[in-house]
Length: 617
Image 1 (cartoon, rainbow, N blue to C red):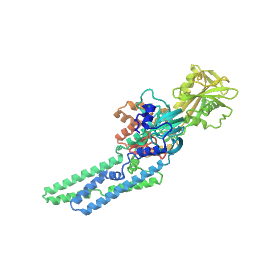
Image 2 (cartoon, rainbow, N blue to C red):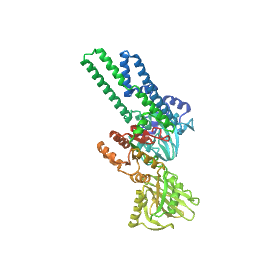
Image 3 (cartoon, one colour):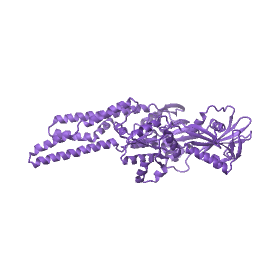
C-alpha cells in the first residue's frame, strides 16, 4: 500500500481506499500485524527520541565544562597528568549526575502517560474489538462515539450528528460538525477538512465510522510534537552559565597574557614563563563549580519529588527560583474548569423558577450536541421532568446557535428554545411577566431593558444563554426551524466557572515574592475581569488578541510590559508574548496543560504542567 497524501481529505473516497488497500469492513489481524511492522506503533514519543549516548554527550556543552576540558588538555600537554586525571574525574561525575537526573525524570514522565486511557474500538476480521491505540495502523476502521478521543488522523466513512472539539489543534472555541462526504472544493488546511478527524481531538456528540489514514508522527499532532524537538530558546539559567563561563575565559586569558608579558618584559625564560601562565590558568578555573551546581540542583529536584513535582530538567529549578513573570491560562488553572449555573433570571432580572424549568427540559430532552452548559443545567436535579415527554427536536447547529425541543405534558405542548441571547431575542415577540406564563409585547422599551440586563450580566463575567418558549397545538407533530418564531422570551440562564479556592492565596504568594502574574487566555475580557476581581487580582491593563495581531514587535514589547490581562489570544500569540517578555530580560514561566500550550511551555524559561495535561504538553 502507499502512504496517503498529507491532505488525504481532498482525495475521492474510492481513491483513498485504493491507496490504503482497505475496505469499510476493516483489516484482518494478519494484515494489521504486517502493517504494524512497517509503520511502527501509533505513538508520538518514539519519533525524535535521541540515543542515550547523544543525550549524555550533550551535557558536555556547558561552557564551564568546556573551560575545564581546555584546562585539562593544557595540563596533559605540559606533563601535569595528575591534574588532567583529577579534572576529568570531576567533569565526568558532574555530567553523569546531570544526565542521570534528567533521564530519571523523563522515565517518570513516561509513567504518567500510561495513566491515560489508550484503547480504541476497531473492526478486525469483520467484528469490533477494543485494542490499544498504539496498535492502530493505516487502513484500520474505527468506531467513534460521544466522549471518545480520536486515535489517529482518519477519513469519515459514516457520520450521524457528529460534532468534534478540535480546539486543541485549531484553537476554535466551539465544536465543529463533521460529515462523511466529498469536499466541494479542495481544502489546504485541516480546519476546513469537514470530512476528516484528527488524533488528539475528541467527540462531543453523535456516532461515526472512520478509516485511519495517518498514524503516530505522521499525524497533525505528531507534526506539532516534531516541531518541539527543535532546540528551545536558551533559558535564563543557560544564559547566566554561558555568561559566567565567558567571563572566566576572558579573565583567564587576560591574566595569563598579562603575566606572560610581564615575565617577557623582565626577560624571564620563555618556557618557564609559559608554564607559570598555564598553571595560573588552571588555578583560576573553578574545577568544582559544575559539580557544585549539579549536586545542588539534584538535591532540590529530590526535595521537589517528595512533593510530587517532577523536575524534567535540572536548570528549571534555578529558573523557577529566579522567575519574575508567570504567564498562566485561566480555565482550569485559576478556575475549577467546571461551569456552574449561577443564576436564572426573568426579563425583569428576578430569580425565576420558570426559566430554570424550561432550560432543564431543553437540556434533558436534547439528544444532539451537549455542551458543558447543558451539564451545568442538568446538575439541578430538583427539577422533575417525569410528567413531560419529548415529541421532536431541532438539533443545535452553529449557524442558528440554538436548540429547540418539542415537549408534551398532556394538557399542553410547548416548543422550548435555548441559545444565543441575541438570536433568541430577535425571534421573540413577547416576554414573560411573573411565573404564571403571562406575556407582554416585546416593544423597544422592553427590549432595551432586557438588553441592559444582558450587558450587566456579561460585565459580571457570566456566560449567558437566552431561554424562550412557544405554546403549540396539542396535535403539533414535529419541530422544524420555521417553528422558532413568535417566541415568548422567558429570561436568561447565567453561568460561571468558579475560581479555585487556592488560586487567590497562590497569587498573593507570587506577588509577595515579586513575581508578576499575567493571565493569557482565549476567553473574553469581561469573564476574565470577573475572575480577577474574585481572586483579588488588580487589572493593570488589558491587551486583546486582535490588538496583538496588528502590532509589530517593539510596540508589543511596550504594551505587554504594561498589561497583565491578555484576552482572546491564539496559541501563536501566546508564544509571541512569552518571547517578547524574555527579550526584555525577564525570566518567564508558563503554566499550561493543552496541546496548544506546548510551544509556549517549550519557549518559556520554566514550563509548568500537570499530570492530567495533554500528552504533547
